[in-house]
Length: 164
Ligand code: SF4
Figure 1: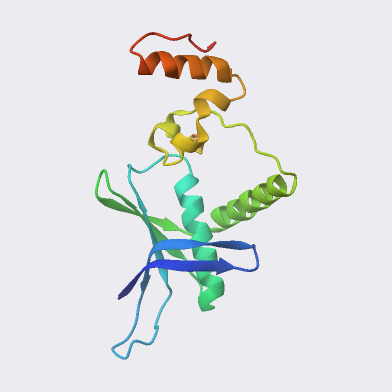
Figure 2 (figure 1 turned 45 degrees about the horizontal axis):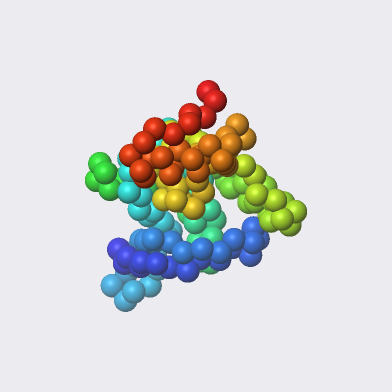
């Protein structure tokens, strides 16, 4: 097995580009590819109930299928917190989810629209938390309260609470 890291990805069919953390390529002794590529996405946390990580992995699989002209039936998610891999079947349900999410993101980009972020438990382990700031931008949140609370917190005081 040959391991390639930070492999640039492209899927013209869906209009996707990206970079895979790691791709495992089964090769023979002369370095010729003899099987399907397998994407391995590395995550900081632990396995999740929701599909976000699996959708990302499936998008990588669709890119690899187009790039190598081979089926990619399986990928892996490696979770650093539990140091364990989760094997994910790239099935029809995930493929359709990738197509749907891609279309929704494209619609939002074309309309120059940013959907409001909703603060959820998953936000705590999200690497985009410092950019997204769902505590201040969710549909029921008031940015002025968020800023006041953040300021109060940095001063060691208690700030205003958001409505439940
Ligand atoms: S911080 Fe933003 S991007 Fe991350 S999970 Fe929460 S809402 Fe989604």
